[in-house]
Amino acid sequence: MADPQTWDAVDSYIVERQVGSDPVLAEALEASRRAGLPPISVSATQGKFLHLLAAAVGARRVLEIGTLGGYSTIWLGRALPPGGRLVTLEISPAHAAVARSNLERAGLSEAVEVRLGPALESLPGLVDEEPFDLVFIDADKPSNADYFEWAVRLAHKGTVIVVDNVVRNGAVLNDDGDPNVIGVRRLHDLLASERRVSATTVQTVGAKGYDGFTMALVLGGEAK
Ligand code: SAH
Ligand code: DHB
Ligand code: MG
Image 1 (cartoon, rainbow, N blue to C red):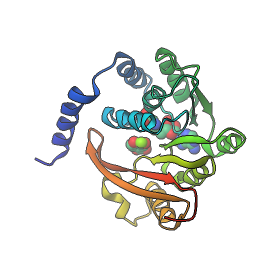
Image 2 (image 1 turned 60 degrees about the horizontal axis):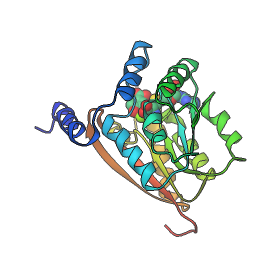
Image 3 (image 1 turned 180 degrees about the vertical axis):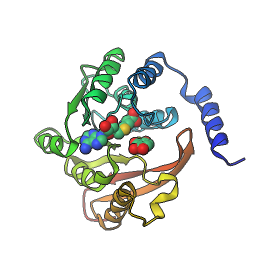
C-alpha cells in the first residue's frame, strides 16, 4: 500500500478535510499550467503547512527564493498581518509575469513584491531592509547552500528558514555528480557545521512524491 498512488490518495483525503479548495489557488495552478510553467509548486498540504508556520511565528516579513507562478507565495502571503510584506525572487520573466497576475487575483499585489533576476544578485540588495522572520528557499538546487548563507545573513534570532526538496526521492544519499544533489548535499554539510542555526530535515511523501524539507531556527548565541 505504501506506493506513490497511495501517497497521492492520502494527500487528497487530507486536502478534503483540512486544506480545502480555493478558487484563487486553483486558478493560480491552472494559469501556470496554461502558461507552460513546470508543475513543481509545493503541494496543497505543503502550502498550508507553510501558511500555518508563517502564522505561528507571526511573520511580518517573509522572503521567498523561487516564485514560479506564485502558488507557495499566495499561501505565505495570506498569513501576513496587515502591513506585512513578502519579497519573492524569480529569475524567469515569464514565471514572474504569471506570478504577478496570480498575486493580483489573490489581492496580494500590495503586500508582495516579485523581484526579477538571479536570486544571488537580488539578495545583497536586501541587507539594508529589516530582517526577515521567515525564509522559504525553493529555487535552483545547486545554489541551496549559498541561499541558506544569505538567509542567515538576512535573519534575526528566531527567524525560521525552510528549504524545499532536500531529499529528492532519496537521491540525497547518492554521490553520482547530479548538480542538484550536489547542491542539496552542500546544504546538509553546511548544516553539520553551522553553529548559528539549529536544524532538522523531515522526509515527506504525498502528491509531490518522496522528498523532504529542512527547517532551521536561527539562534542568538553559539549553542546548537
Ligand atoms: N516556490 C514555488 C516553486 C518554485 S520552482 C512554489 O512552490 O509554488 C523554482 C523557481 O525558481 C522557478 O520558477 C525558477 O525559474 C526559479 N529559479 C531558478 N533559478 C533561479 C535563480 N538563480 N534565481 C531566482 N530564481 C530562480
Ligand atoms: C523541482 C523543483 C522544485 O522546487 C520542486 O518542488 C520539485 C521539482 C525540479 O527542479 O525538478
Ligand atoms: Mg520545491
